[in-house]
Structure formats: C-alpha cells, structure tokens
Length: 79
Image (cartoon, rainbow, N blue to C red; front, side, top):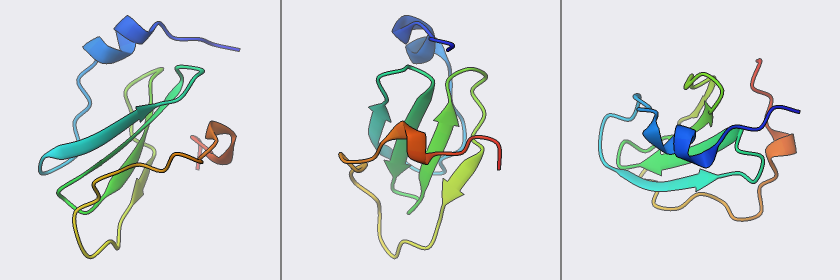
C-alpha cells in the first residue's frame, strides 16, 4: 500500500472550498483526507495527487465538523 508522508500532505494546497474551512481530518494511512466548511460542503481529498474526487452537497448550513466514526475503507476515490 502507498503511504504518503504527513509533511507532504500538509504542504499541498487543496483548492475547492469557496469559503472558510472549519474541519480537516487526515486518515491514518495518509492517503485520504476529509474537509468541511462554510460553503456547506464536505470534500474527500486524495493525498496522492491533491484531487477531490468526491464532494458532498445538500447541507443547509455550514459543515463545522467531519465525522469521527468514518473509515477510509468506506471511500471510493475512483467513482
């Protein structure tokens, strides 16, 4: 399995939210991260290349926290 250095992830600029970002969760493998923010969206990011293959929309208010019980095995980064 591919493991990305945490420092490498933190240096990458992830563009996509249109407002403030309130929460970022890095998963243990270092391959997936999750962000949420004022734009009422939650995004799944690939730390391998910085892409955002999945965006969850439909919230009616800012998303201030990412889920604590999520497993990165639940994410398909190649929809």
